[in-house]
Image (cartoon, rainbow, N blue to C red):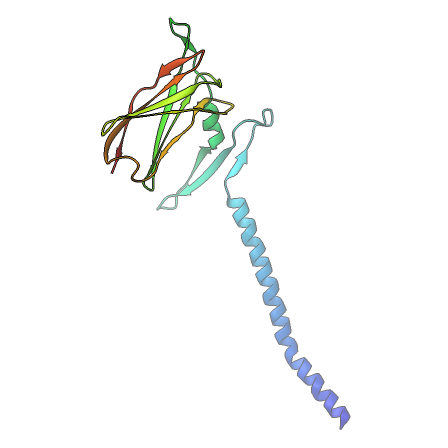
Length: 195
């Protein structure tokens, strides 16, 4: 009788053997499929190319798009670094009759989630020690004098940030004036609306 018990146990083990094999095959298939999926994702991502002669060049990404008819078109999409490098090309510095450098301004206004931010930067020279005065007019007139932020490419005025409700509803105009011992000037006026 003990011999029969061993045989019946062996039969039970052998009965589960195909299920174990099937389970192992399914696991291997999942691993292989997952690996192939990851390989496909990595290789279908936009490709980068950098000029080996100049490692500081911007990366260009090849973006492949398929239209509704299944036609494939390839576009070059330039990395943000290239755009920043282009913007960093500074124009000539003009000197006024009073001997002060005339700033060239880039005044940006952003409105997001009820907040409004204004930031001015001077794109044609870099210096520290000056100040910026933002003047807002329209519904009311307000002035804010701020310092300069350290930046390796520009002279950047500290930003103004108005939370929802800080400014009355209506149209506002803003300009920024820069003053230092060696430079001075005022930006063009820009308009924005508070709802």
